[in-house]
Length: 146
Image 1: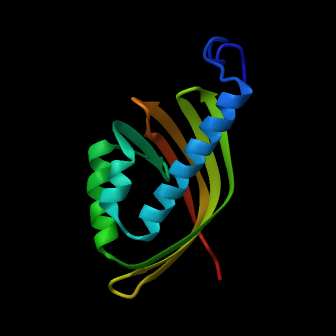
Image 2: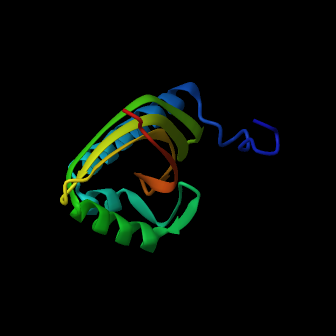
Image 3: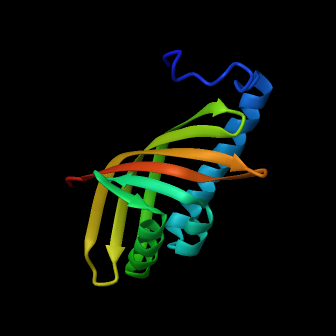
């Protein structure tokens, strides 16, 4: 990280604080995974800050677009199976961290269409008033060839 991108030294978490941030964000990531695989759009939305934005396959989306899209997408699914691996949580400061991972999705729509993707995701988590939620996400989906 360049000095220009580094947080001020008084915001850099101590090792103990880093471990606490990593544990809290790790739990938040798996809560998001559980909501996703349960096709529970409202639980996913509760994990987003109102100023959340996303870059999904090159498209920039704001909070309203993501919440509307999540509700519509989840309503059209019969099955959502996703495996997340190589999760890494990097504390940025005491109240912010990046989580990144690889994914493999198998999705079946209510019309019977099978969609299989793999890719990468990065989440920027922020803690406000003791609560961790997503501030930003980036997801890159690539078709999974059988």
